[in-house]
Image (cartoon, rainbow, N blue to C red; front, side, top):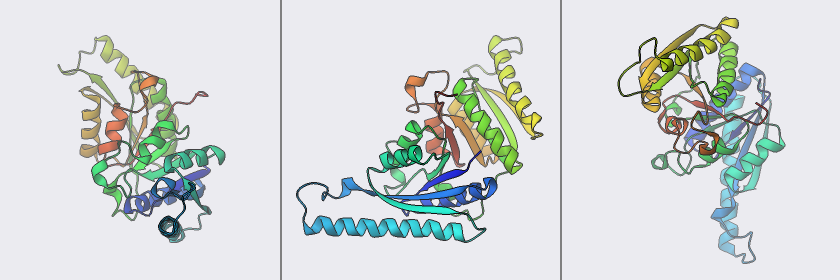
Length: 291
């Protein structure tokens, strides 16, 4: 499923945590890793006519930092099995360079930290990661800072939230494929938006929820994957967040938009909130025209 995995890096601890996940997935899928560091042109002005010594020194410092960032990821990949990789340093606006690289190199998965050198206080909103998740046709795995101290990556349980939408189904396909490859169990969760508890079994909303989770479970069982289904009532984001924490979930796979419509993309959605706060990595899958 994944032959080419991109690991962007800015040298931060969170980026290196993402690199370990990239190494883990590359090993599982026999993939090649592409390491990319971007020298942000917005932090120096020598692309303009006015070039001075200060800007040249700033550019040189940023290029050195990019080289160090790439070397750090290369060392992570070299610590275990022989994973093939390619390294590149480019100049530009980080999210634009990443998106272009994904498109031009047929990248099938991007693995990146949800926070970079900008600091944890910014969360995900407005960050490079959020923009890449919003706009990339290829899936993006956002690895949270909670995984910084995790040297060995493990994945025993995968959560697949679904609302039955086409975007959710795209994430289902990838979640089941990863579970199959890694021999992980799957939890399928459907949250009925309700402040009055779970509807009765005869309620149409409950019937639809049960149908959707059963459909996902059937796909998992066809691959002999251990699967459990869950139908809950409440706030989708709140229930997903609690499920991740209470069940010790190792990975979440979600579509970037659901029944509320494609136009909203990620902003303000359940997926965006989950990406901001999840203790587990989140694989965000954007519905493409071909799906």
